[in-house]
Length: 274
Image (tube, rainbow, N blue to C red; front, side, top):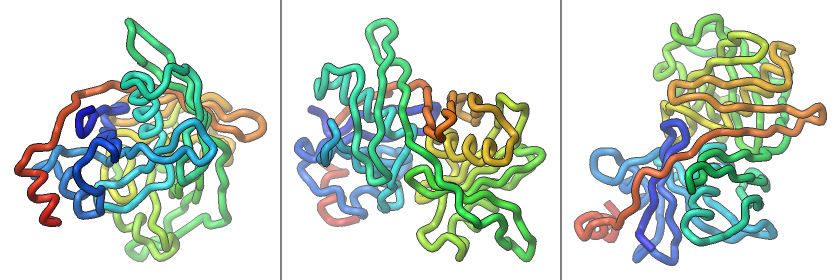
């Protein structure tokens, strides 16, 4: 097997790696170098084959800053496609263990390839925090956990938000001691919400599956949408369904980009802990 397979979900790209195929340990330093878009391969994170812990398979989700995420909606879809297309399973439906809880993946095929994946993402928990202070101004928020933490800010026009300026300030706000993912959301209709994303440990991203689930849950909590909603992001759209019992289902595409081995030069830098 190659050292990595690179795929993306709506522009949110990950490298998938199996430790048994690597001649080095995935330390935080190694992860930062590999994910670096100038000195490494470049990605929004690394998905690592791991123990299923009672599920069919397990995945660790490593952020480009070297930290570990609990869950990733795009990540689990990418990982599910990898498992099916690289010989780890012949199943069309299976479970994945993540730090943020177990999820179930259902694969759809088109022209001999896995094209769409539906993931049962579990239920959202919305806490009591409804406002924070940023730059001396009170900001209304909805704090949501879908296996990983999110802060949803509903705005009139998402195109007018300084995502790169406000995003890191909210991510590192004292109200979130473990940091948080940040979404700015514009409710277009009861069937569509447009969002921009600042991802914890990764920064600005074109798309996020768990962010889409969190925004849908926050918008439903406020009575702004129905049970089925399209989340529109710069990278594309995901379909989110919230069942009457609160279970969240996400459906969206995945595309593989390439696979390959790390060069001798990069392996040397990893060995040096650069």
